[in-house]
Length: 254
Picture (tube, rainbow, N blue to C red):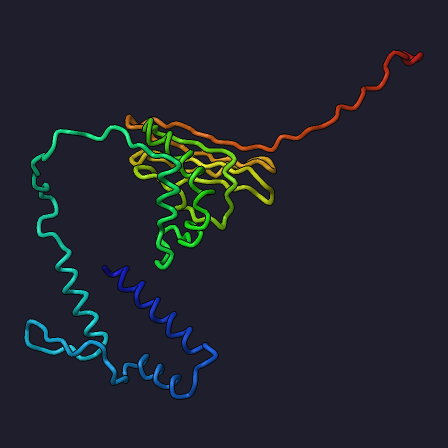
């Protein structure tokens, strides 16, 4: 709750700073924003609040502290160690496989509401809708075999991703985000690894040769043993072998 409050305060300050630096800021707007920042503004959106002891919170800080304490108590569990209540099972059927087809993915992408804001992956709805046919094949090819076989570790090469693509792009439900090493100043290339949620993995910083993209992970198994995992994408060169010199004539001094 405290982190959310600090985030909201920083966002409010950034919005206020952008308003003061805007080209259309006049003297009246400037002074009204200054008074609002100093707490002298009379245009309060929240009326005075009454505490349980009968006192009144009038300033913005007092109101914010009072509301933060109120919602913190609402979100605090009295007995956090108490197990959750047992809910009776309402059906005896289980979903063992999830059918994902390229046509279904494309249909869902075309139905994206472009008027909504971007999600946690910061991918624009406009991109998802207008590039639905191109994205449907890629998303289906990566998620379908992983969800079907419920594999623990998935490795993809030739990702063609760059640093402009968010790390949460293409996240598969039940798996971590893709741990990537994107291509460097060239077309193609790039590797990515995703793990089933629950596996403990640490990325290792190991130097690789130039024009080589690699991801090194140390996975901790349930019994405590460690497993080293490496995914490498390397550029292959074509070279012409130079004919070796003729060594039939030997040196007479030998």
